[in-house]
Image (cartoon, rainbow, N blue to C red; front, side):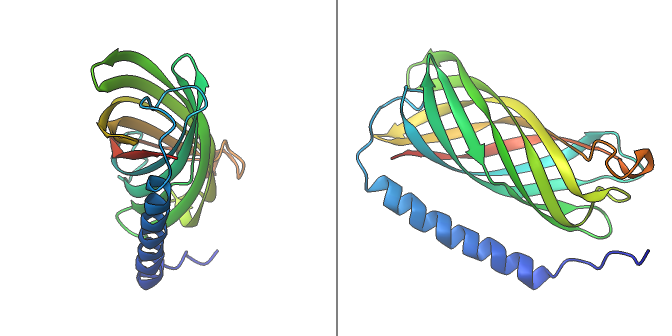
Length: 200
Protein backbone atom coordinates (compact mmCIF):
# COMPACT_ATOMS: atom_id res chain seq x y z
CA UNK A 1 0.00 0.00 0.00
CA UNK A 2 1.41 3.42 -0.97
CA UNK A 3 2.03 5.81 1.93
CA UNK A 4 -0.52 8.56 2.45
CA UNK A 5 0.45 11.87 0.91
CA UNK A 6 0.78 14.85 3.24
CA UNK A 7 -2.23 17.17 3.37
CA UNK A 8 -2.23 20.26 1.16
CA UNK A 9 -1.27 23.01 3.62
CA UNK A 10 -2.64 25.76 1.35
CA UNK A 11 -5.95 23.93 1.15
CA UNK A 12 -6.11 23.63 4.93
CA UNK A 13 -5.38 27.35 5.38
CA UNK A 14 -8.02 28.30 2.79
CA UNK A 15 -10.61 26.07 4.48
CA UNK A 16 -9.91 27.66 7.86
CA UNK A 17 -10.16 31.19 6.39
CA UNK A 18 -13.46 30.36 4.69
CA UNK A 19 -14.77 28.87 7.94
CA UNK A 20 -13.82 31.98 9.92
CA UNK A 21 -15.47 34.27 7.36
CA UNK A 22 -18.65 32.17 7.34
CA UNK A 23 -18.94 31.94 11.13
CA UNK A 24 -18.27 35.67 11.48
CA UNK A 25 -21.18 36.40 9.12
CA UNK A 26 -23.36 33.88 10.98
CA UNK A 27 -22.52 35.50 14.32
CA UNK A 28 -23.47 38.97 13.01
CA UNK A 29 -26.75 37.63 11.62
CA UNK A 30 -27.57 35.83 14.86
CA UNK A 31 -26.71 38.86 16.99
CA UNK A 32 -29.16 40.99 15.02
CA UNK A 33 -32.03 38.83 16.28
CA UNK A 34 -33.68 39.47 19.68
CA UNK A 35 -32.47 37.15 22.44
CA UNK A 36 -35.35 34.92 23.63
CA UNK A 37 -33.82 34.39 27.06
CA UNK A 38 -31.10 35.52 29.45
CA UNK A 39 -30.26 31.88 30.23
CA UNK A 40 -28.28 29.65 27.79
CA UNK A 41 -30.00 26.60 29.36
CA UNK A 42 -33.57 27.92 29.04
CA UNK A 43 -36.22 25.67 27.55
CA UNK A 44 -36.75 26.42 23.85
CA UNK A 45 -33.68 28.65 23.61
CA UNK A 46 -31.53 28.43 20.48
CA UNK A 47 -27.85 29.42 20.56
CA UNK A 48 -25.09 29.53 17.99
CA UNK A 49 -21.85 28.22 19.50
CA UNK A 50 -18.50 29.30 18.03
CA UNK A 51 -15.54 27.74 19.82
CA UNK A 52 -11.99 26.53 19.49
CA UNK A 53 -10.14 23.72 21.22
CA UNK A 54 -6.61 22.48 21.77
CA UNK A 55 -5.96 18.98 23.12
CA UNK A 56 -2.89 16.85 23.79
CA UNK A 57 -2.81 13.06 23.71
CA UNK A 58 -2.79 11.99 27.35
CA UNK A 59 -2.20 8.23 27.16
CA UNK A 60 -2.22 5.30 24.70
CA UNK A 61 0.59 6.86 22.68
CA UNK A 62 0.83 3.86 20.29
CA UNK A 63 4.46 4.76 19.45
CA UNK A 64 3.33 8.27 18.55
CA UNK A 65 2.04 11.45 20.18
CA UNK A 66 -0.75 13.54 18.65
CA UNK A 67 -2.05 17.06 19.23
CA UNK A 68 -5.52 18.20 18.15
CA UNK A 69 -6.31 21.84 17.30
CA UNK A 70 -9.68 22.80 15.96
CA UNK A 71 -12.57 25.19 15.43
CA UNK A 72 -15.95 23.98 16.63
CA UNK A 73 -19.10 25.62 15.21
CA UNK A 74 -22.35 24.31 16.62
CA UNK A 75 -25.92 24.89 17.75
CA UNK A 76 -27.61 24.28 21.10
CA UNK A 77 -31.31 23.93 21.90
CA UNK A 78 -32.81 24.04 25.39
CA UNK A 79 -34.82 20.95 26.32
CA UNK A 80 -35.74 22.20 29.80
CA UNK A 81 -34.65 21.60 33.41
CA UNK A 82 -31.13 22.84 32.66
CA UNK A 83 -30.51 20.39 29.78
CA UNK A 84 -29.62 21.43 26.22
CA UNK A 85 -29.18 19.39 23.05
CA UNK A 86 -25.90 20.11 21.23
CA UNK A 87 -24.89 19.55 17.61
CA UNK A 88 -21.47 20.51 16.24
CA UNK A 89 -19.22 20.16 13.20
CA UNK A 90 -15.62 20.33 14.46
CA UNK A 91 -12.86 20.94 11.93
CA UNK A 92 -9.48 19.86 13.32
CA UNK A 93 -5.82 19.94 12.42
CA UNK A 94 -4.09 16.91 13.97
CA UNK A 95 -0.32 17.06 14.46
CA UNK A 96 0.99 13.48 14.26
CA UNK A 97 4.78 14.00 14.29
CA UNK A 98 4.88 12.96 10.64
CA UNK A 99 1.99 13.09 8.22
CA UNK A 100 -0.45 15.54 9.79
CA UNK A 101 -4.18 15.38 9.17
CA UNK A 102 -7.12 17.64 8.45
CA UNK A 103 -10.31 16.18 9.91
CA UNK A 104 -14.01 17.04 9.72
CA UNK A 105 -16.43 15.57 12.26
CA UNK A 106 -20.08 15.70 13.21
CA UNK A 107 -21.29 15.21 16.79
CA UNK A 108 -24.54 15.29 18.74
CA UNK A 109 -24.87 15.30 22.50
CA UNK A 110 -26.21 16.86 25.68
CA UNK A 111 -25.08 19.58 28.09
CA UNK A 112 -26.48 19.85 31.61
CA UNK A 113 -26.26 22.58 34.19
CA UNK A 114 -24.71 21.49 37.49
CA UNK A 115 -25.11 24.80 39.32
CA UNK A 116 -26.01 28.41 38.65
CA UNK A 117 -24.06 31.15 40.44
CA UNK A 118 -24.76 34.75 39.51
CA UNK A 119 -24.04 35.24 35.80
CA UNK A 120 -22.24 31.88 35.61
CA UNK A 121 -23.62 28.39 34.96
CA UNK A 122 -21.39 25.35 35.57
CA UNK A 123 -22.08 22.36 33.34
CA UNK A 124 -21.13 18.86 32.19
CA UNK A 125 -21.35 17.77 28.57
CA UNK A 126 -20.86 14.72 26.37
CA UNK A 127 -21.31 13.91 22.69
CA UNK A 128 -20.77 11.16 20.14
CA UNK A 129 -20.28 11.23 16.38
CA UNK A 130 -18.18 10.31 13.38
CA UNK A 131 -15.18 11.85 11.63
CA UNK A 132 -13.34 11.68 8.32
CA UNK A 133 -9.73 12.78 7.76
CA UNK A 134 -7.52 13.18 4.71
CA UNK A 135 -5.02 10.64 6.09
CA UNK A 136 -4.85 7.95 8.77
CA UNK A 137 -5.75 9.12 12.30
CA UNK A 138 -3.81 8.13 14.27
CA UNK A 139 -0.98 6.64 12.17
CA UNK A 140 -1.65 2.95 11.36
CA UNK A 141 -5.36 3.65 11.81
CA UNK A 142 -8.00 4.69 9.28
CA UNK A 143 -9.36 7.92 7.83
CA UNK A 144 -12.81 7.19 9.29
CA UNK A 145 -13.23 7.19 13.07
CA UNK A 146 -15.96 7.25 15.67
CA UNK A 147 -15.83 10.13 18.15
CA UNK A 148 -16.74 10.19 21.86
CA UNK A 149 -16.15 13.22 24.03
CA UNK A 150 -17.00 14.55 27.45
CA UNK A 151 -16.10 17.40 29.72
CA UNK A 152 -17.12 20.13 32.12
CA UNK A 153 -16.97 23.90 32.15
CA UNK A 154 -18.89 27.11 32.66
CA UNK A 155 -20.78 29.76 30.74
CA UNK A 156 -20.72 33.42 31.83
CA UNK A 157 -23.21 36.04 30.63
CA UNK A 158 -21.39 38.91 28.88
CA UNK A 159 -24.43 40.94 27.86
CA UNK A 160 -27.91 40.30 26.53
CA UNK A 161 -27.80 37.20 24.34
CA UNK A 162 -24.01 36.71 24.58
CA UNK A 163 -22.18 34.21 26.78
CA UNK A 164 -18.55 33.20 27.15
CA UNK A 165 -17.96 29.46 27.40
CA UNK A 166 -14.84 27.62 28.64
CA UNK A 167 -13.96 24.22 30.01
CA UNK A 168 -11.92 21.04 29.84
CA UNK A 169 -12.63 18.35 27.27
CA UNK A 170 -11.63 14.72 26.70
CA UNK A 171 -11.89 13.26 23.17
CA UNK A 172 -11.59 9.64 22.01
CA UNK A 173 -11.14 8.60 18.36
CA UNK A 174 -11.19 4.99 17.17
CA UNK A 175 -12.66 2.95 14.32
CA UNK A 176 -14.02 0.11 16.51
CA UNK A 177 -11.78 -2.38 14.64
CA UNK A 178 -13.67 -1.86 11.35
CA UNK A 179 -10.39 -2.48 9.48
CA UNK A 180 -9.21 -5.20 11.88
CA UNK A 181 -7.69 -5.12 15.36
CA UNK A 182 -4.25 -4.23 13.97
CA UNK A 183 -5.69 -1.06 12.36
CA UNK A 184 -7.38 0.41 15.44
CA UNK A 185 -4.87 2.45 17.46
CA UNK A 186 -7.12 4.86 19.35
CA UNK A 187 -6.38 8.47 20.23
CA UNK A 188 -7.17 9.81 23.74
CA UNK A 189 -6.69 13.55 24.15
CA UNK A 190 -7.43 16.09 26.89
CA UNK A 191 -7.40 19.87 26.62
CA UNK A 192 -9.20 23.20 26.67
CA UNK A 193 -12.38 24.23 24.86
CA UNK A 194 -13.49 27.88 24.74
CA UNK A 195 -15.74 30.17 22.75
CA UNK A 196 -18.98 32.15 22.75
CA UNK A 197 -22.70 31.41 22.67
CA UNK A 198 -25.00 33.79 20.78
CA UNK A 199 -28.77 33.62 21.26
CA UNK A 200 -30.97 33.70 18.16
